[in-house]
Amino acid sequence: MKFSAQEEYGLRCLLRIAKFYAVSKSLTIPEISRAEGISEHNAGKILRVLRIGGFLESSRGQIGGYTLRRPPEQILVSDILKVLGGRLFDDEFCSTHTGAMDICTNSIDCSVRSLWKMIQDAVDSVVSKMTLKDLMGNEKLFFEMPAKNGFIAQN
Image (cartoon, rainbow, N blue to C red):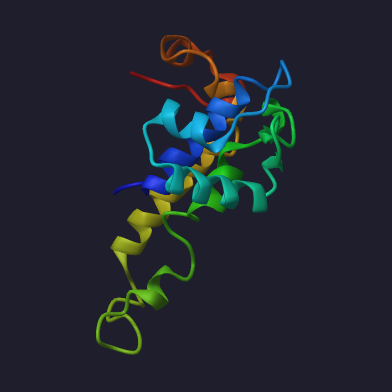
C-alpha cells in the first residue's frame, strides 16, 4: 500500500507553512520548494490544491505567499488527505476494480474487500483525531505522545 507523492509533499508543505503561522509569516513557492526539495512546479500544483481545499490563503506581490487559513489545531489530517488524494478504500472501489467484467467476480462474499475496509477504518481512526498541530512537534515527541484523542503512536 502506498500513499501518493501528492499526499506526502502536501502534508510536508502544510507543515512547513504551519511552523510560521504563529509569527504571521507567509512563504513563497520558491521558499517551500527549496526547503522541501521538490520542484517549484510541483510545489505550486500542490499548494493550489491545498488553497482550493480551504487550507491556505495566498497573496501576491513582494510580501506575498501562502499562509494557513485556520490555526493548525483546527486542521485535521484526515481532511488534508481527503483533499490531496482521497481515501485508500471507499464504497466505489469494487465498482472501479472489476477487471474485464461488468461487476467484480467476488462481489458477494469478498474477504479482500473486508481487508481493505479494516485497513481504511484503522487509518481513519488515527487521522480523524490528529491535527496539523500534532504533527508540528519533533518525531521523538510524537512517538512519546500519550493516548491523546484516543490514538497511541508506537515505534
